[in-house]
Every structure is written in C-alpha cells, then in structure tokens.
Amino acid sequence: MVKNLMEAGRIWNEMLDEGFKPDIVTNTIMLEGLLRSKKRSDAIKFFEVIKAKGPSLDVRSYIILIRDLCKQTKMKEAVEYFYEMIDYGFHPDAAVYTCLMTGYGNDKRMDKVYELLKEMKEKGCPLDGKTYNALNKLMTGQRMPGDVVRIYKKMIQNGIEPLIYDHEILLSNKKL
Image 1 (cartoon, rainbow, N blue to C red):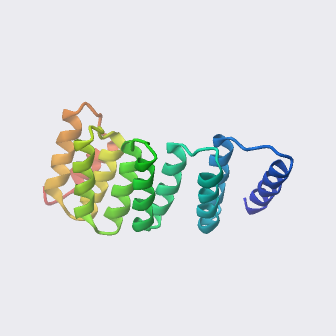
Image 2: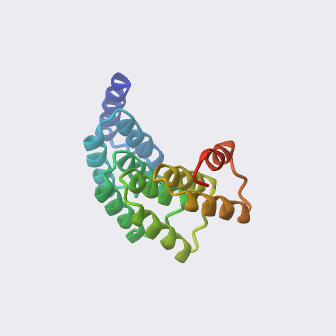
C-alpha cells in the first residue's frame, strides 16, 4: 500500500508540474489513501492544501477525515472539522453524526452522544439503520439496558428493520 501511495504521490506531483489540476474525486481518493496508510498528519496537510488551493471540498471529503479522527478518538479535531463543514454550507447527514456519536461513545462521553441525538432531531436529520446499530452497541457497552430497549423500539417505530445483531443485543442483555 505504501509503495502504491508513493507512486500515486509521484504521479500527483507530475500532474501538478504539467499544469493539470486534480478534481475533487481524485483529491478524495488521495485523502482516503493517506488515511488508510496511517499517514494522518500527511492527510490533514493534504486536506488543508485542497481547502486553500481548490478545487473545493465536498461533504464526502469531510466525512472521510471526520470518520478517521473519530476512530482514533481525536474528538476535538473531528468536531472542529464538523463545524467547519457546516460553516462551508454542507449539511451533515446521519453518517457524520454516527461517526461522532461512535467516537464520543468509545471515549465514554455519552452526554455528547445524547447532545448529538438532540441536534439531529432539531435539524431534521433522520437516524438511519447504521445510527441505530451504533447506538445499540454503545448503550450495551455502557450497560444501559433501558436505553437499548428504547432505541430498539424507536427503530421499529421509524420503519427501520433491525438487523440480527440488534436482536442479539436485545436478547443477550440479562438486565432487561
């Protein structure tokens, strides 16, 4: 992977030297490659260069970076990019909120998870199946059986089919 990334970087520099300007899809692929290769600081520098020189970023670019930061529980940075994304006029979707909730939940900050749920509701952003699944997993990990049942019921009320995983969580929770 690193060899391929280095080759991509070489080609990238050649393109720039010859006057070609990569489009947002190309930039996003390069960003993902850097993050997958565990080159987060390079990815962030690259992201900042794209922001400064263009082409303009899209919501997917932000999601990719935010997701990676949340996986590493770098929540301060993730939230900064989240609000920057909003400032640039992008509307966060359930995927972005789910990343943030998972990051906060893994960091044992359930208060922040609930704040994000409230914000989603206020902004009219519906929860999707992945969000409900993440919440069920977090609530189980935090030993919050009442919330697991509430989330499970809400999921069904909203017409989202629970996965087998959700049923297992509900059935395996001995405190219910």
